[in-house]
Structures are given as structure tokens and as C-alpha cells.
Length: 116
Length: 111
Image 1 (cartoon, each protein chain N blue to C red):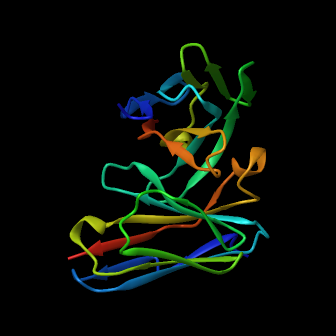
Image 2 (cartoon, one colour; image 1 turned 60 degrees about the vertical axis):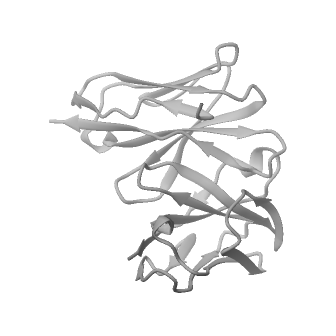
């Protein structure tokens, strides 16, 4: 009964390919997020969705396109992968995105993307 | 200047030691403050919130100084299982729930 799950856990691909990462939460939360953790270990927000509506788009290249088919799922599609996209991508969710309910965010196990 | 700054460490301490981590943040509009813990190659997990009055959870004590824009975490009687990276995290009002993470401070507790 994993709370926030992501697939795949590892993804190795070549430059120029297109790939998707899937995320699902079974916590009944309204808000979901994508974070990127680079080689220097900084975790940085990329996107957030609240009940399928885009809330945050943090100046991410438009090769990255999130899609939220319903409030329990937030997928991340990446076009034309580049070497610099290599990182760990974490999905997270919170009860909602305002006030105290946004603070406790539950993270998925991460997807380690390696672009060669 | 980074929005949230921490000493990356590593801090290498013996079991039973007391260790303190510091963090500074640059945005005076920051509203809420947290410490998250991240084990090696795992996801971050909320350790505790940080309140102006200071708060304690067992061996862990967190302090906030809004005037100096400074946050601290004190761990008493360190255990081997405390070995992890401790992330200082800030939330700014009205930014859609965005959490701003520091780089993390690595702690290694040795027998």
C-alpha cells in the first residue's frame, strides 16, 4: 500500500529520445508535484498540479510536459532528452497547496534518469 | 545567493554526540520552515516543522530566528540510524505549496 509510487525506478536512455515517468498517489491528496534532484543534490520544484490544474511551472524547458489525467496521477513526459537532464526526479503530493496542508509533502521513491 | 543555504558537511560524529546544523534563508517573505531527512538514494521525508517558539521531538530540537533568518536543528545522543542528509526547507506564502530546499547537510554517526 505504497503512498506515492513512481515508475520506472531507473531509466537509461540516449540523447534525443522521448521518455515518460509515471506517478500515482493513493493518499487522496489534491496536489502533486515534480521535483528534480541534480548531481549536487539540490532538490528543485519543477511543476505542481492541484486537482488536475497547473499551479506551478518553474521555468522548466518546454521539452518537459506534465500531464495530470486525474488528481491521483501526475506524469512527466520529456522530449529530446539532453545530457543535462540526467538527475533523480521525485514526485510528491500534499493534501492541498494552500496553508498548512501544503507543507507535509510525501515523496515517491524517485526515478533515476541517466541520459547517455 | 542561494535561497536556502546550509553547510554541506559531512559531519562525522561518534554515537552519543550532540550535533547542530544551521541554515539561513534569504527571502524575508518565507512563512514556514521544516527539516526533512533524506537517506542515501531515498526520498526526502519530513522530520519536523520549525516554529518561532522552538520545538522539540524526542532527541531533536529545532529553532527559528526570523530576525536573523536562521534555522537550526540540534540532535542529542546521536544514534547510528541518524546517519542521513538533513535538508532545511522553506515555504513562501502564496506560492502554490512550493518547498525551497537547501543543499542538505550530511551526517555520519560512527560507532
